[in-house]
Length: 416
Image (cartoon, rainbow, N blue to C red; front, side, top):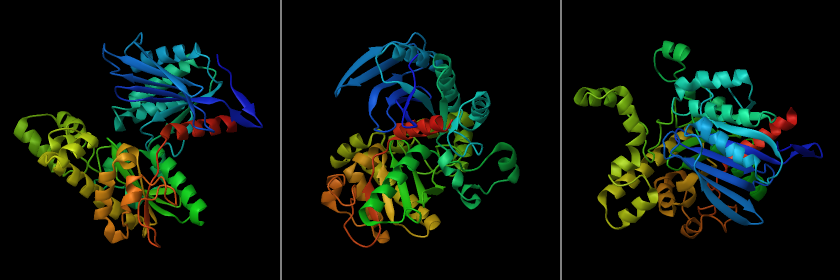
């Protein structure tokens, strides 16, 4: 069993970061101080006979990738197989295991050490995230079985948003739905929003002495899944995702905001169940449905440039909806100091960022084309993609959810 170590009263070593999705398993060995990864794993098609795991180890700046077939195809079996292989490698000492958990409801307001009661509560919250929490719980169970001597920590996607005021998380629905069924807005992507908002505040404070306690920021996490969050003084006060990740922005395969009556209409016309219709709203809508082509912005950008009408429409709707939500979130902030873009699209899609800033020019966000093309790398403050001036700025800040999970885990291990 790898041992844990400490230097000068602080935890020294690496954290195993586990992220079990509905059909995938991700694992990384992360140094919480430097962010370096000694190992990363991606398990795909979990739950099918074609399950496969790609394992990459890094040493001395060189990486080696091998592909293995897990002995079992379930989340628990696949993760247990990977962890057993991990123990056979010459790796840094392990100090703890951090688990991404999608739904913490209103129970968990921060990251917590996992015990039997916490695991039971994660299972109980599966009704709010039936595709994710059961997989997350299976990952915890597998890791605890293989690494029983290490502390395990649950880091919740929803926890960062538990600071939202009631006026921003309540739906205008019968009170019984809220009181008995927990129908309210929870928000997602909290780990990314927390990491990115903290990093942006640090950059702006170092650059021009901004007070992080009063900073008004909208963080837009744009990837295959998309959400935006209003962050005031480091606290989430409003966000676009709701009870589930389906609400809010248009996404790769998710519809985003929708009139609920659409579900009744489609059910009446097709005879399809509510479950089937919601499945299509999650996996057959968004950019994929609008373009009739792809959910990948890179593909759509290329095809739009060639004149593909569906690709152009998909990008226009995507950007328009994102701009509407960003502008709306400034109401919860009372203004805007910084728009922070992150995620695969937010960090890399120059054209999408340009389109978005064009629609938000009325907020004082004026694109600097050269800085945007360079992803803000040579700008001051770092990441800035708007023209210098006294008004709000837009900036690109790469997210690192695994590093935040590792740091939360190390901090709780140190406290314990």
